[in-house]
Image 1 (tube, rainbow, N blue to C red):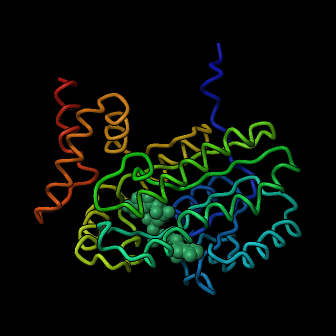
Image 2: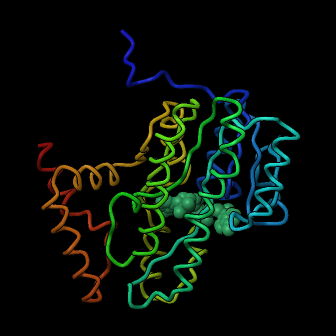
Length: 292
Ligand SMILES: NC(=O)c1ccc[n+]([C@@H]2O[C@H](COP(=O)([O-])OP(=O)(O)OC[C@H]3O[C@@H](n4cnc5c(N)ncnc54)[C@H](O)[C@@H]3O)[C@@H](O)[C@H]2O)c1
């Protein structure tokens, strides 16, 4: 018998899809997978022109800084007049930040809220009316594992990504009546150009973030492949790696151990020792022992 909680993977062949931040990293890899599946893809990014030779053939490019209401309106106008509908919206554009609460400036906070949280909100606000009219659609927001488990010295990034998870859950329930699905991708660190966006006041913590991104064991291609399978299955929270699954399940089912691991991570940072991704090693150790 068909399990109603595990829908068959849906193909995106023929779908009209918009990917924000699609010129690099995860957005670019998702674009490649969509094109290979036969979707029509509009990539938007902050550059006036797409970087030479980066986008797959047939992909349309437009400049859209996710902070600009005007550029969102122009993009919506393009989609309405060219395609008439939007089947898939991937709100993926984002920047990185790391920083202790007493070192981060208010400008650091405002910058990341405007891009990573309000950029997603603007995308949803812009295209939900079109999807409601069509009575279908899929919104995929790129959050982060940081949206689910909140490691020390990353308060601004954690807060905006948790905000993306909250908006996604809200819309999943709010838009179900129009048959609009919502998914949220929550990866741990993976190798992309993301570290180049770091520009906050906490230089020391940002150096750690650079290492965690550039030396991550996963590539954007690997993360995209897992995320794409989750999207096709219309999963809500899409965890893309073992670190994420351990940390998220640890928080839900082993709260005291999670708590101790995070406090230990905070103390290590306070003592000037390197942070580990989400203070995970204690949870990993526990998970490994359980497997034996
Ligand atoms: N790399 C990681 O370790 C990691 C982990 C978890 C979540 N993420 C999230 O994945 C998403 C993609 O990041 P990535 O790692 O592929 O990084 P990336 O830097 O390779 O790609 C991000 C893209 O977003 C674009 N962008 C940045 N600011 C923008 C703006 N204001 N308007 C429009 N486009 C803008 C950039 O130009 C770039 O093309 C981000 O939301 C990021 O927070 C990344």
